[in-house]
Image 1 (cartoon, rainbow, N blue to C red):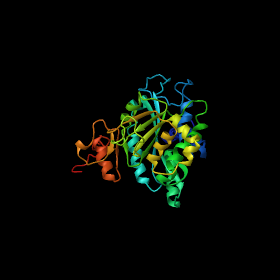
Image 2: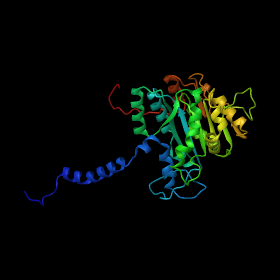
Image 3: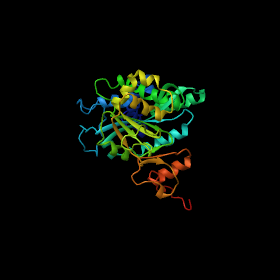
Image 4: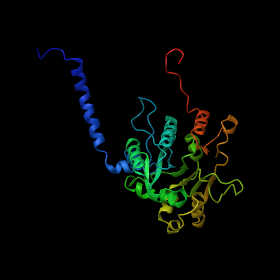
Length: 327
């Protein structure tokens, strides 16, 4: 056999694919346990690779609009961390929520804002089977925040969530300014329309700001607290919570009322944005029960309610792909 004969298809494929395979393995092996346990480090570290101006620090560049776009990309105007508070056993619910938010990460949204969605869970108690499955999720998706707390909304989980973030982000965001403009706490039975959320934040204050739904019978302009279905704090308030002895002493209690009490007792959150009625409880599958300018829908405790909501807001459009007759 001559060594000069035309190489086979399989030989050519091996020559092309082997270097690419080795390159991918090199990248995967470089991921440290710290990266896997702290997915917030990913976004903050990535933001350091784009520019060095202080005004836009901590933000990931928007993706190019097309293949011919400039390699120097503009940063979005604001950044939001959305922490979905859930429990270890709700694996299927997290998968549903993960898809619902991933589908909203359109080029238009990414150009306007960096919205990072993470799942906040307490480490205690966690049976072995749930611990194994949560570990798989964390490694596969990099979006699980495992907090050092007991799993109970009214036993300090919200405090641990907010108070832990500055330390979790300090190393990854060193020298880049605030890692996020806003941090949100949202229930796992709440669906957010991310573009509507970002639109309301575009001109909102970036300091001393408390955002959510106040009860209608309280002062609408300055509600004493925001309902736990979903509320948001500016980054400076998150830092204040982390360093306040008063807040640490008063961490236990109904989490939404307690958060409002911290801010009121500390004379904080002078800028309050009440989005009532644009975030509301689910009523029915009827179109008239969903507002056109909805930001969030709460009380989606059953899958069928999620299905109704996602269908109404056109997240489930699907063209038939099967060509089989009568299928």
